[in-house]
Length: 87
Image 1: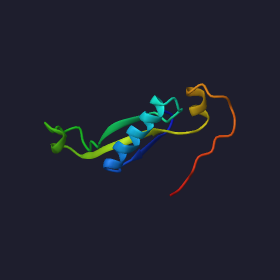
Image 2 (image 1 turned 30 degrees about the vertical axis):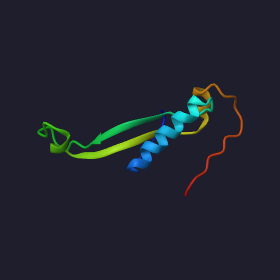
Image 3 (image 1 turned 60 degrees about the vertical axis):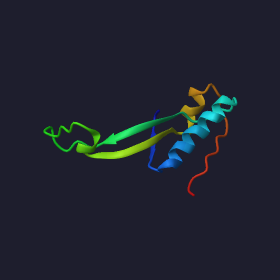
């Protein structure tokens, strides 16, 4: 994945990941997704035994960007690629 879109959406991240996988199973080219646990380590002395003893920032969904590399990775021909921005 060239760029990663980290989105913290609670259960919506689960729905998005499942939705992209369903598209894939139906034969539709879809973005690859991966769940990522995000930690921030402030110092080398930080060593918690569990994720709850460290700076755990949550579970995020990494979504493959739809750009020229997406076309290459999925074996699609060059052409117009439209992507909706904003909400």
